[in-house]
Amino acid sequence: MTLWMVRAGRHGEREQEALEKGFVAIGWDKLPDLSQINSKEELTNLYKKVFPNAKKMSAANQVGQLWRFMNSINVGDLVILPLKHRSAIAVGKVEGKYEYRKEAGEGLHHIRPVKWIKTDIPRSEFDQDLLYSLGAFKTVCQIERNNAEERVKAILKGVRISGDQHETQTPEFDIEQAAKDQILKHIDHKFKGHELAILVEAVIKAQGYITSLSTPGPDGGVDILAGAGQMGFDKPKICVQVKSSSSPADVNILRNLVGTMQKFKADQGLLVSWGGFNGKVIEESRLSFFTVRLWDSGDLLSEILSHFEKLPESLKAELPLKRIWALVQEEEP
Image (cartoon, rainbow, N blue to C red; front, side, top):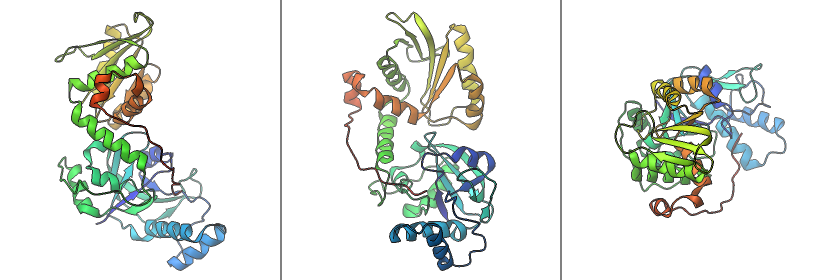
């Protein structure tokens, strides 16, 4: 058994359908059915015919990824899908050989069937060296450094096996995601329990709301009350529940928040879960789209970065960040 990473589009545009229908897909829609390709040389010739202007190194790189997707990934291998729309990682087992689906939507023609084992593992459950490996820009690549396969199997069982925390990033690396992962690790270490609610309240204040934070301990279903206007009396009136656990929140937490909103006569609710949300929460939250928002750790980080300059100096001292510029590298299709 081997561990592979297969991405779902530059912006995660294929991930939801891949998770719902059980497959991984790789794009390259201009290429026809590849099931009759018998050699890498034959695939190279076809690629050059379809993409005559491709540079030699780029063509070789992409042909290599296509060949691995078709032939090197075996039935029974594990596959990792880093999610773009959630701060989470999905892990599944490959269940079938390469298939071509001519009538499928954009980016979904070339697929491998997958049985997803877990689709909501928080990124914080992966040590930094594994996240470095998952930061490669390639659409398809094998993940093998630092006993990666056994460690991912352990994560699926709720166990953590540490690797080389001094491991450096690989070439063609997503610097932005690596920086975010490091910040998330820092927040996870510094802001435990009620401290995370304090951080969330500071972000909401920076957005312009008047807030009231509950004291540590039982909170009656709400950690933060927030209101618009100079004194907080204007709409929207918001109930905020903050969960600092690394485990994904279940649907009962969402339902409790909806009930709490009625109790406090709130217009809207915000559920912040550091460990993300399971599939049932994501599904049911659509029924409350106009009244409830969900933030996982990635969403919270985005809000922190957007409003960092307005945060209290005491929190900035606990979370020392510096804006930098970096060259954007092109991802594969």
